[in-house]
Every structure is written in structure tokens, then in C-alpha cells.
Image 1 (tube, one colour):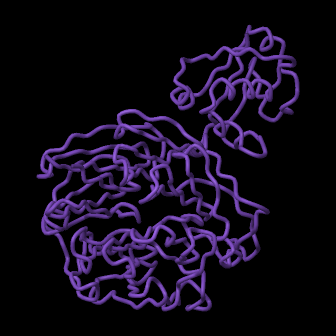
Image 2 (tube, rainbow over the protein chains, first blue to last red):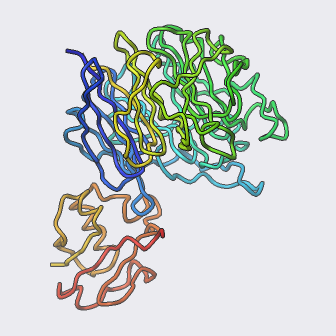
Image 3 (cartoon, chains in turn red, brown):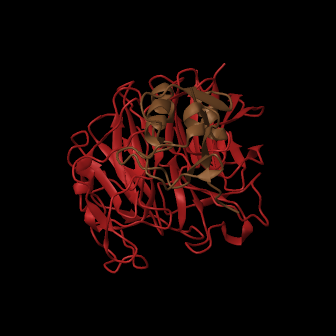
Length: 371
Length: 98
């Protein structure tokens, strides 16, 4: 019987939630790496029992853990992230230039085509790649050449938090950085170009349509249509139909277009999900109601999904990596909150139930659909 | 035999009990102890000292014989009691938080 494995990163460890295709009864495993921040944990599409976890804390720095048995056992692998070449500088809070300094790994993205290749998005923003299963890491420094001197840290640091692979073209990657914007490579990571035309950030940038500097929060792509990208920006939900060449706003009737994550439905390329958050100053849902919003028209027309989600006195946040979908026949949607809840919908968002309610603050949620 | 006490998270990471015993060739200093520790437990690389600079991470402290040795030169000889194994070299996670 098929099922799902939900990989949850939290402020105080990782948790693995498993269920069958009904997604009603759940087994909870964890905490793994108890007491450590797990920014991200993700499995390989090519070898589903191979998982990578980004483990860090303020005392002991960054570790990368790998499991080859679906999270039952783990092995620390390489944790040296050295920037290539002469370390350049970026904009600092006081307007001066500041040298790149490694702080942590925000996400790990196993390759869709090479079993031993995995990408890491790090703070200060850069993209690293391992081609030996995480044992050693090498930067793809061309990314920082895409006007890196104009990038600047957002409130959460200057982090590369999104990596999207084109399933039909292993050489084409998209990344997003706060606060720099979205970038694209078509040669496997050597050369990069900013793809921020159409973004407008009047509250964050003196030149609101600058080529770089935008605080992009997340990007999503449906694998069947790799030229269509969806973006949750600091403010504004956006869409591009030409692989990022030009973006247009699709916020439509959302109660607020601020938020962090955005994902696509597993089987419906025009169905997308966001979680509106009141504002950049008030990181909780509007009106104390946790509502996932779904558009079945590729944006602009949105409906609130509320059944089973708290609709009063709810002041949690949903971070950029804490919304995910499975690919079972009836698409499952998963949302993790800073209040420690992980909710599941087994019917594309129509109704929800909590899997767990009292985990540490959830940083990320990823889902594996198992045969 | 040099005795080293690791903080909880590093004991878990290295899968060891409270104390670690190390053979250190030559002078017994912070650097030679940490070199030996990382050689024996490679998973600890980068968790006590930064890669590249080899500087102590900011929230790590080194205690021994009732003294805070964190700000001593990494190449200074450690107290006799550490060199003989009478006292452990303590690697401590600094107080932080509230």
C-alpha cells in the first residue's frame, strides 16, 4: 500500500511522520538531532530512502546529516562550506559593503537526475553542490557574480532559501534569495542572470523595480510545466509564463498578499496554494484565522480553505519551507506552523486535520510519496 | 592520556561517554588537543573551531583546573594537571540565552 513520509524540521530537532494513503493514522518518529535547529530535511526523488538534513545551532555551527534508510539511522557527512575564490562583499544594514560569511544551510535539494548530487542553499547567500552524497561541497560562485554587491540581508539574514530544478533540463536551475531576488542558470550553474523583471517593491527598495534586491520568499514550479513559475514575494504573489523573464501579479482577491510559502498541486498545474500573513510587521494570519488559500486558475481568483484549521485566536506563522504537497491520487497538502502544529489535508485542501499539535516551532515540511 | 570532556551535543554527535581519552604527541596545547580530537572524531570538525581560520567558535569555552583558558593562545602549554591526565580539558558550550 502506498503512503507518505513527512519530513519536519523544527527549532529543536527533526520529526518524521508516516502514514498510509488514507493519511488518517500517523506514526511519529523523533526528535532526531534533539535540541538542534533543523532548517530543512529532504529526500532524494531518485533514492527515496536517502535523506539529507541541515542541522545547526549557535554553539556548534553547521552539520549535514545523511540517512540511507529513510531516517532510521543517520551519518554526519561534510560540513565545510568554503566560498570559492576571493570572498566578495554585499550590502550591509548600514549601507557599507560587508564580506560574505558562512552562517548556515537553509535548504538541501537532492538532484533530480544524479543520485549522489545534492545542492545546498546557504546564508550568506550562495549555492553549493556536492557530487559525492554530501561528503564534500563546492560553491557555484557564478551566482554571486550576478550583482552580488547589491544584495542585502533581510530580517532573517541573507539567505538562499529556494532551489527549483527543471525536471526536463538538468542544466536549468532557479534560485531565490532574500533579499536579492530570483536567479536562473541554463548551463548547470556556471552563469546566472537575475530574473526579476516585473517585480515591484516600493516599500523595500528605493528603486522599486531594481534588477536585484527584491525580497523573494519562495518560488514554485509544476514539473509538467517548467516554464511557468509562481512566486510569493515579500508583498505580492506573482507568476511568470516564460521561466522568469517577466513576472505579473496574481494576488487578486487574497486578504493580504504578504506571506512566505507557495506550492503547486501535484496533478493540477494551475492550482496553487499560499498562506496569507497579515503583514511584514505582524507575522500571523489576518483576523486570527489560519487560512490556506487555493487558486485553481493559476492566480487572481482565490478561495479560503478553512475546514479543520483554527479559525479564531490563531497567531502562528507559516514559514517559507513549511507548506508541501504529496503526489497521491488525491493530492495531500501539508502545512507546519511556528506554533508546532502540522496539519494535513488529504483532499487537496478542502478539509484539514492536525497530525501533531505540540512540536517545536516548525521550520520546514517536506513530503515523500512512497510506493 | 589526555582527558577531554565534551558538551552534551558533541558527545551525542561523537557517540561517546562523558570523557574522551586522547594521545597527544609533543606539547599539550589547545591546538594539539583539538587536532587529536578531530583526528579521532572527524564528525567534530567545524563544531569547536571554525574551518579555515581554526579559531574557537564564539560560544565555545575551554576550561581546565578551575580556569577559563578560552582566551589563551592556542599554542600555549596547558596546565601540568591536564598534561598528566590528572585533570580534564573541558570544552564547554557558553551560557547564552535566557
